[in-house]
Amino acid sequence: MNITVVISLIAGLAWIVTVGMLAVTVVRASRRQSTKGTTVAFVLAAVVALILTTVSKGLVFVEPQERGVVISAFAPKGYREQPLQPGLRWIMPYVESVVYYPISKQTYTMSIAATEGQIQGDDSIAARTSDGQEIFVDASVIFAINPQEVISLHINWQNRYVDDLVRPLSRGVIRDAVSQFRVDEVYSTKRSDMTTMMETAMAEALADNGLLMADFVLRNITFSPEYAASVEQKQIAEQQAQQARFVVEQRKQEAEQARQTAQGQADAAVIASEGEAKAIVIQANADAEARLIQANAEAEALALLGDAIKQNPDVLTLEYIQKLAPGIQVMLVPNDNPYLLPLPSLEGSSSVETPVSVIPTPTVPYTETNP
Image (cartoon, rainbow, N blue to C red):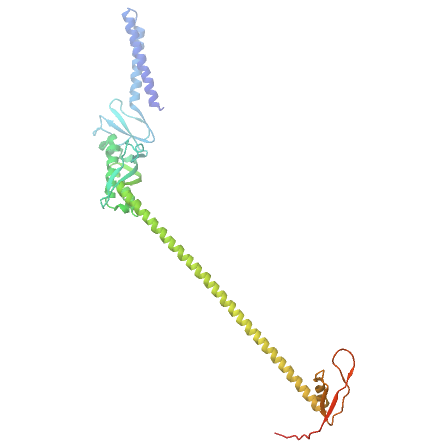
């Protein structure tokens, strides 16, 4: 409660006292009683009430979120050219009055929902796109009065600026913006561009009339039932096509996975075959090397044996005897060789002597020829 309200209340009480004193004076006068005291009290009460009323009429308090337009009978234009700023201010009583305008942000909503907008029922904006489709737009305009333009707003619109300025202006801007886009652009690729166009046009139009736009909210876009059904069918078809593309891609991935698996198995088989081939080659090389070593050893042994025979011919006889079969009963020996009898039997472990028939063979003269 500000001081102006308090003064007004006191002034009201003073007038009540004044009326009361007047009533007492009249009653006393009708009874032929003295009215001197009551008359003085009445005059004093009337003076105090008049003074308080005058003060209450001239003293005004402007809230921080308000600006005041002073309507003056003594001003050349009928109003003060500067608005009243926040605080306790003085105006000329009885000849000046103040009209208060809020400068805080206000919201005006137009919605298809019955209880959301300033007007009950469906208050959405019906607009047509560039290709002739009808759509319904829900929108909210957040705005504020320009503190520097309060005087001009009062002159042009007074308290009608919401219903007669903001509402028709916003609906016209929305319709103009929608008419520049196709219906498919409205709900998809160009919606942000359309919203920006609406916001820019709305801000310029409101600024020309003393209002500042804080924000523009495109709340919702509703299509006609026929077009909504066609959009839904199109989306279903696109989803089905996308699902089909997904299945095809999945099959491709499965085929690629199978191909890579087969390639891996083939590579493994090649590596295994190469390993087996290398193993065979290594084994063949090892066998060849072993045979070569064995052949070299046998050749060396034969060479040593040949040297031994050259040095001692009896070595050949010894080799001959060692190579005889164990069950031989008859053998031919050279005529000029000594007989080695008896020969031990090789059957069993006993030392039984087995008679052997020895047939001497004539000595054949040997003639060495040189090739």
